[in-house]
Image 1 (tube, rainbow, N blue to C red):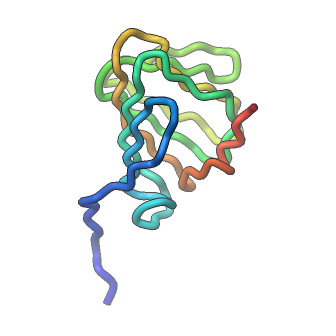
Image 2 (image 1 turned 90 degrees about the vertical axis):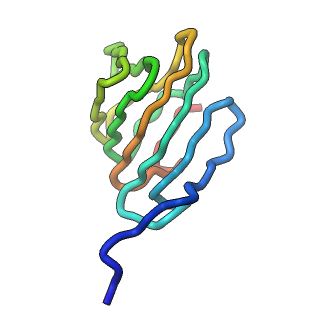
Length: 120
């Protein structure tokens, strides 16, 4: 009989070169799942390029604030706020503020760099 739960005690630390900390608890790089769940810490000044992902992405801000540009609309999320960005939508995530932004990101289906379709 299959186990009815999985505990993650050692999330996978995704290597980055932009100062962002990514701890994947569930997803392609850690415990296989049909979603990815990651704890993120974005330093001041961090940003990603625009992307048009093949997954829905849910973001829950724990501390600080985060800027999200969805299509042409700029959104600022503060601690305690959350957002769902639908797959196939052009989006850019960044932290242009002078404080750390800590958040949880959930992607369904799971995040992969290839499925993020980042612009160069």
